[in-house]
Length: 220
Image (cartoon, rainbow, N blue to C red; front, side, top):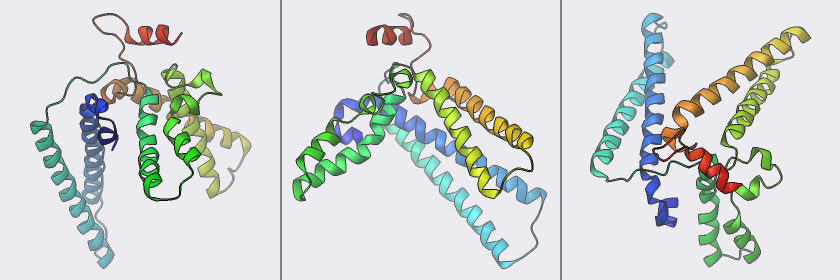
């Protein structure tokens, strides 16, 4: 949607294809894991068991069709090397397109307040983090990743409380520590390994020096 709205974003096309490939890989890993579980521990024959097996087979078929379609697109589409100085702020701006484009189109045919439309057009990641500059993903992508990992860990801990309170404060703190540390570590590892591949963090280095350093100095 953003490519259609802003042709200047065409350099990110390869990142979209990479993201699709990564999603399909994650789906296939999950389906293979489910299949292994079904083979190792067969469920008792039942109508609903057969329905679930049929759904698993259908999901496999759908995923494989998507893999073939993506491979065809990869083969036919000519893409350029994407920018190496992107940050999570660019991803947030991409997501905001899902709001900006419909509101802009609705303003032409509906009674949408002009001030609201202009605010939606001007809004971006920098405005969102204007009051918390220390974690602004454009200037501090790694701080943002750390904060996001901790936030997910806290959210997972709070979600577990819906199942009831822990038997003791000590056990509760241990479980919370495991959730928070696991999510924090997984976020940083994923950000380090896949962030550059998906265009979510600046490259560690380039032939002309550190992209992150140049970006940081430019923001300074």
